[in-house]
Length: 81
Image (tube, rainbow, N blue to C red; front, top):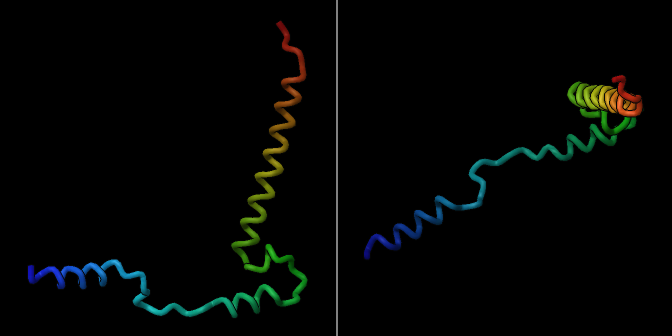
């Protein structure tokens, strides 16, 4: 029975939600970057990775639209027997 208080303290320490290390707050830095008036749209202000993701998304959209139109055209044509 004497180990019960020890186990209670141990369980509280183990499952604590408090952060042990302090992280630097990067929000003000990001706000400066995204609020800067440099002529770029907001979805490209993040740098090279944003530009690559944008181009990949646009490429997939164009390819997907082309494929859908191709399949619709094939479905509309009668099959030769």
